[in-house]
Picture (tube, rainbow, N blue to C red):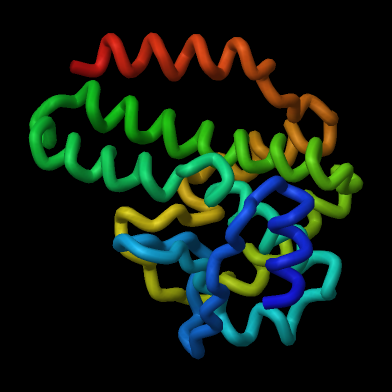
Length: 182
């Protein structure tokens, strides 16, 4: 909880999420069903990886919280209920999830000034931890390593191409999306 509080402050999150440690072997994820946001971490992860790697993993999940990805996942789920038959929905969903992870990587690397190589090693330590079968989190949870794009993300991280878009561009994209979505 203390690591989450400190890291949340560095990421600009006012009210840090509750950290739930569960005995199941699953990928870390963000969970929200109203009320307080929660980050779910597997119990063994903290025991098997270095504290610096755990901080990076926690920072990645906090990045999802800062970006509001848990809210977007619910919107995605509702959209999927209406447009499950449309192949463009599934393509957009896949691309959005890929870029969700890349956006969190860029946010962590930029906000915490984390060494890119160590951050990439942190992601790999989670993959090693999960190398045995694990429980899949719910579809509306923000999961750290999904979509089979880990190699692409690691190359981007190590090559230091993880950059944040300027605020004006973020606002323009958000406005355009809000106007075009209806």
